[in-house]
Image (tube, rainbow, N blue to C red):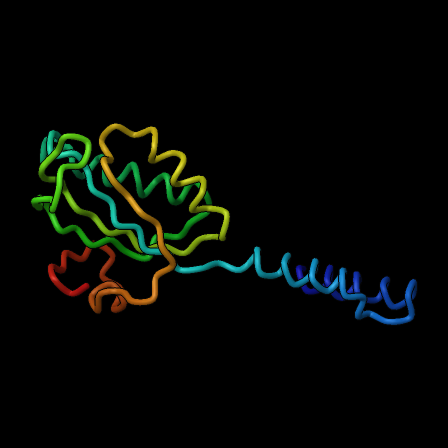
Length: 150
């Protein structure tokens, strides 16, 4: 479907201008194609240590549902557990570390970031394009708990 739209746009350009390679149109078409491609992201997240360990799974699931609700596809997660922070973050000296790996459109990280900024249980997060994943997640173990591979 996407390729048909681009080809028909190029045919219309050729009819109007005699060439399908009008520079401004090609930039627009390339940008549109790039925006529609999914990328693999990694999102390290630190949850508040004040969360009950029994309720931690529900908080982790809420973030997974958030990723899915913006059109992302979960690849896996890596739960590191309670760790001491290098410095205080929002008056906390420790936090629960969880790494999420997912595929999503380039617009999804902005939506995820905006939603996580409003959650009081998330004290820090960062979304980056993933270049490397732990081996257990690459093998398909979606609930991997691998410590020290990253």
